[in-house]
Length: 255
Image (cartoon, rainbow, N blue to C red; front, side, top):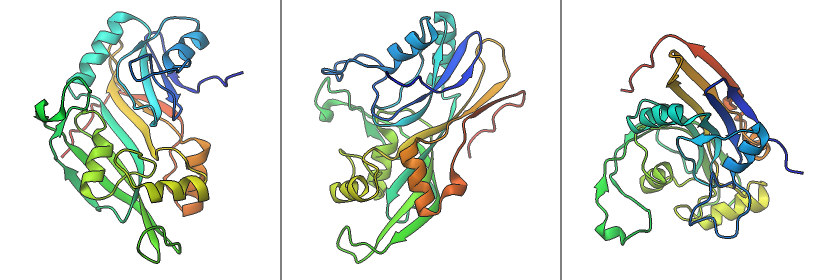
């Protein structure tokens, strides 16, 4: 039997869940022979229809919001489209990442509908900050030791694979990223450290409630694999916890 999804928040209009890594949100042309989807599992668990309002890539874990009616879905979808939702991610990358930086590399959409050269380059902004780093006495690449960093990531736009592409272009690919990362480091984490997944997790969403007003901050802990890795690397102090809080104060604009 499949374990129930972890519910992070629920009211009469919204529900927030912890999406596991490797689970598709809903059916699509990328689904192939998949039979299990987050949307279906949540619907069955709650016994009612749910409406997605944003997306997470299949290998990314973390907090996802669903509306419980179409009107709320439309309102919250408009907030995401208008960049009125603050998002916070944690990522484990190769190398010692930048202390704090705003990445502004324009990105072409990767929707597969036409050649990339015909797709316009769109504005893409991501704020990154190194929270910690570790050096392992293991030669994974051409150096005698290997260094990795824990990055806090706040995307200010919502382009497809934006975080993965921005960090890779900056020279700090996310561990476990098969397309934009480095295979030797991915294999090392999978085989030696027990982390065969993309090490990217959506750990917080903050937004104005589309019906009741006021602000909601929803946080999401990491799965067991990433938690064990953080503890092994001495990063336990950065582990997020499941939780939700409501407040009246508006969010501060990013600088």
